[in-house]
Image (cartoon, rainbow over all chains, first blue to last red; front, side):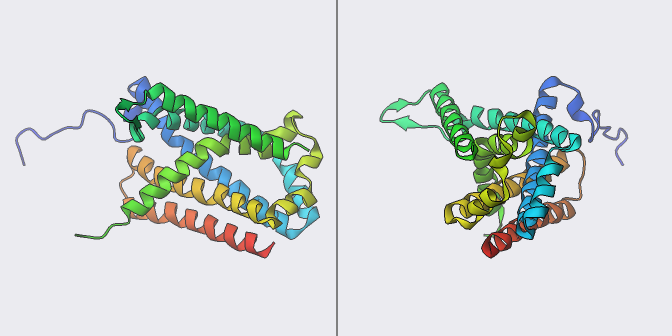
Length: 129
Length: 115
């Protein structure tokens, strides 16, 4: 053993509380818990739908309980944060070049937001009775 | 060279992250909040309407992607995030995360094929 053993200065579990940008990083990472949980809600919904009309009505009613609404509101917040953080790194994740010109990052990010607005509007339009 | 499933897991993470970014917020709004907020009439999620969606090939494909891609994205990110929270049992964490994603994928595929 060395005379002066290395002592880790930061905690392995709470290190991310030390700086706001670490907290933002963790918020981005934790968004996956809500996105994963939401896929579970969809799977349960599919199984209820297969059981018939009465089971489906029960499921839709359960979706409107305060606990469910609170979960979905929180999940929506994290999902939006995921969308923003995902789009904001697209110029680094997939840089684009047109001929000799490097496409500016803002254009790539903006195109993603525009596509997102269209996809969301289309989905809401299709569901709207 | 040693074989690795990293490319498969990574491509599912990237595809799932992109799909989630575009689709998941609107889906959460539609299925989880729209009725309560009065943004949609109750008939929007009526049984026969939803049945029509999962019986249509395009609808089936969309619902499958809505579970499959975000589930694998979330599984991979959760595995990495567990390490960030100080959990060092990566083998067990990976088995649970990918196992749940596989369960969601298979359950969805089987349910959709039966409609």
